[in-house]
Image (cartoon, rainbow, N blue to C red):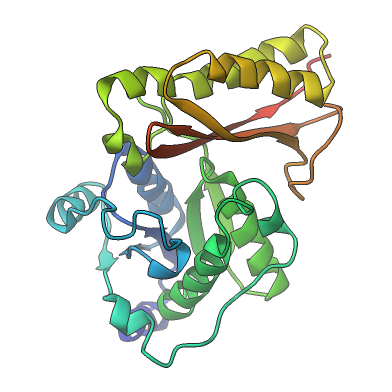
Length: 274
């Protein structure tokens, strides 16, 4: 991959890059289509990264279908698929990690200790291997997007980070490879995440600015559905991810909810229309 990247750069090609864990859905393909707009060569990676999974998480069972993924990638104009083995990315003596101080402390960080260290590390490694000019990330994983953007700034990496809005299923559920874990009944309950975000927008439009009230009403809506267990409902600054007490301008509302045995996330930016 490093040799191919060097060859592309020597020929003056701009490289657009989409890192993924595979098992593609329309959300992944939207990232690739966006990448196609920003580079002469479009490279994707498929790597289920072991360092971002906790001991009790679904690394072994995470869905994989490399042949289907390769076919879908080709259908949207991907030029190179980089799919390394874990041993090539982390040898037995591996000991170097990228750790951010503040951003991982919020939202998903407390319930997934070490997760964002694994994310930041593998993305930094992939950037060094692929050497892209532009990298594309989905805004469904909003905290991940903000962390990667901060890492790039802090380490002075010459890479433009582009976010792509959430892509949803026809019923409104945010697309995720983990949606396949949901039963039919759980799937109906999973729609409570989007409904809670929509309710928050309505509340803000009606003049409610208190974050506590917005969180309470969103939480009550989610709890009214079976199979749901809230990890967090947060209203926070979209740059720092610090909790805010009031919606005074563009404000992130983010959710993480267990539906059955499946942990789902979703988010929206609340805005005030004058």
